[in-house]
Length: 202
Image (cartoon, rainbow, N blue to C red; front, side):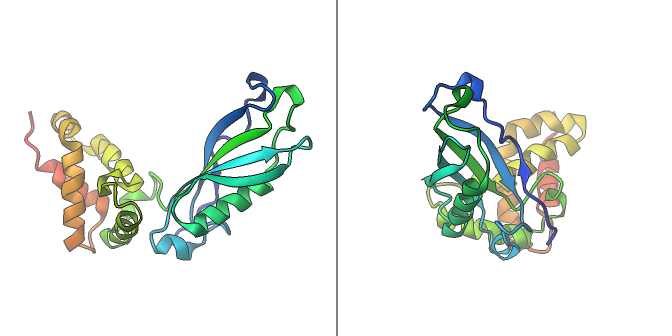
């Protein structure tokens, strides 16, 4: 499996705008497989998701306490997110209006736009099995990888197909998921492109 380092989307806290003691949310940190916090073995089982961590910051800019505010429903990821949030530096509480509590989003993601074209249906089927078992109230089309692939397929289509696809992309995604179930050797993105090509051009 390809290895990716953690990508920090936003960690700087907008302290000047906050009041002392206020709680603010910072941008998600994206963690890809291959770093200690997200072992490849977990990713290979399809385990991924977002953890929202509540951090109590002390006057020295260290995490005095961390707690899961929203769980990924994967205990391994929750523990990893807590460890990451506990180790990070923060703006000292109260200094320059810095808050005493912050919410930190940490997203463990197997895929990125750059890896989607090579993702096999076999790998996707593993992800889907974990997702649907862990989030029974949600649809497979809600999966992050499906949404990334669905949105990027449109840019590969000829002009006449783009408008029909924009109107039917959710149906195309659902058909692609169904097709992948019986075609494990195919690639998810290619299957989605083929399903999109079936749409009438108008």
